[in-house]
Amino acid sequence: MALTAAMGSGIAGLRAFMDALNVVGNNVANVNTYGYKAGRVTFSESIYSTQSAGSASTDVTGGTNPSQIGYGSSVGTIDLDMGTQALESTGMTTDVAIQGDGFFLLGDKNGVGVDSLDRLMFSRVGNFKIDDDGYLTDGKGNIVYGFVSTTDNATPGADKDPTISTVLVPIRLPLAADGQNNTELGEAIYPGQNGATNVDPTPGNNNVNADGNCIEYENLKIDDNGKVSCTNKMTGDIVTIGYIALGTVTNPAGLTHTDGPYYQATDSAGEISISTPKSSVTGPMNNDANDAAGNQPPNLLANSGTGVKSGFLEQSGTDLAQEFANMIIYQRGYQANTRIVTVTDTMLEELINMKR
Image (cartoon, rainbow, N blue to C red; front, side, top):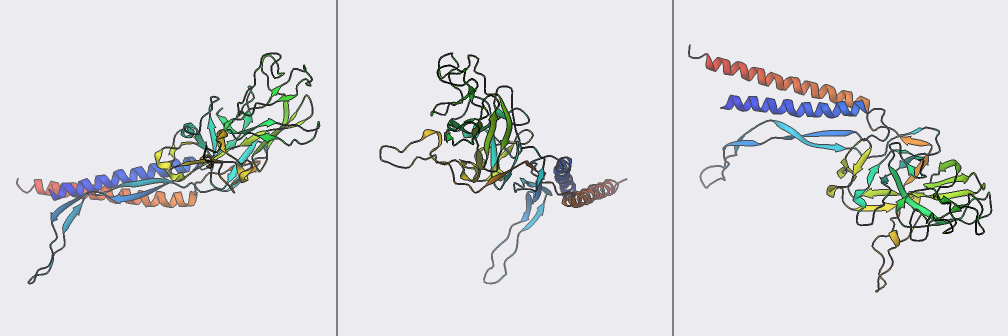
C-alpha cells in the first residue's frame, strides 16, 4: 500500500536524523577533550521500488523513463575529521602535540614486531609521564613506543651524543649501575644493540643493581624533535632516553575508534609507516638488513616532516558553531518526518472510515 510506504519513509527519516543528532551530541560533549576528532554524518537514499521500468525509443514511439518510489533515507557514512587542530599551551615539558599527520604509538611492555604493528594503539594525545617502573606512559598507563639509546658517552653534565637503536620498543629509562667494575654508582647502563629495553639485572652482569632499578631522574622533558631526555640525579649527566615514534596510515579516516583517544589500524586504514618527528632517527627498522642480493630492507623508517610541539596538547576538533547549526537542521528534519508519519496516519484513518 502506497500510504504504508510513505509512513516507512518517514520512520526511516526519523532514524537517520536521530543517528545524526547522536553524532552532534557526542561532538558537543567532547568540545574540551584533547585530541578529539569530530564526526560528520552524510545521508544517503534508501531502496527504491520500481513501479514501471524504462524503455528505449522505437521507430514510432519515444522512450519512457522508469517510475520508482523511494523508501526514505539512511545514514550513509560517519566520517572523522583527522586534520590537525589548534594547540593549547599546558606548560608541561612532557606534554607534546603532533604538528601534522601521524599518531603516537602505544601498547604494553611486551613489544611488537614489524608484522604486528596493528596491535599497537594510535593516539593524538601526548600527555606523557614516567611510571614507577621507569616506562614512559600516557595518562591512562599505556606504554609509549619509540627508539631508545644504546650507548651514551659524554663528560658528566654535558649533553650526550647517543647511539639510537632503530628497533621499535617500549621507551624506558636506562638501568642504574651498582658502582662495581669501574662503574659509578647510579650511572646509566644502556640496553644492547639488539634493542632490548632491559639488561641482565644479575649482580656482576652489565654492572646493574640486583633489583634492576632504573636511574633516578629529574628535569624530564620531550623536545620538538621527539627526544626524551632527563638529568641523572646521581651523576648529574644529561641522559638521552630515546625518541618517540610516530605512526601514519594510508587512510587515517579508516582507523577504528576504540576507547577514549585510541584508534586501531584495521584493514580499512591501509599500510602502517613508522617514523620519528622530523626524521630525527633514520635507518632500517628492527634490524632489517640488506638481503643476500643487496636489496634495501623493506622496513626503512619513513621520512617525515611532521614535528611535535613540547608543552602543548592538541585541542578538540569540535566546531561549536557548526554543531549548533547542524543541530537545528537535524531537528527540523526530524520534525518534518514526524509530520509525514502523522499525515499518513490521518489518511489511513480516513480510508478505514470510508465504510461505516
